[in-house]
Image (cartoon, rainbow, N blue to C red; front, side):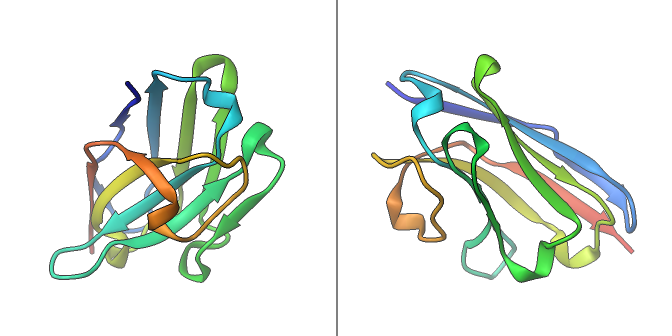
Length: 125
């Protein structure tokens, strides 16, 4: 049984930083692509960032490029999202997800079979 557990969310002022972590268990972590998604109140869930197996490729939605960085440590079964220069519009619940069967990146939430419980990020102005 695959489990994903996020941590690291919190309240931060605009311009500040946070690092989200997601620890996975249940199957060989290194084989699968990982992603971060977020959902703000009253909005649909949206793609934020993704990373392929072994971290060979990464992908970001335009609004976070240059500010957020996804990385992974396969020895620790952990994927990270370093969040710098945060803006109030980054406020959302952030979810990590693991792809169903493939090792590459994807922006399509339907291609992710496993999801964490989410961690709240709130950026005050």
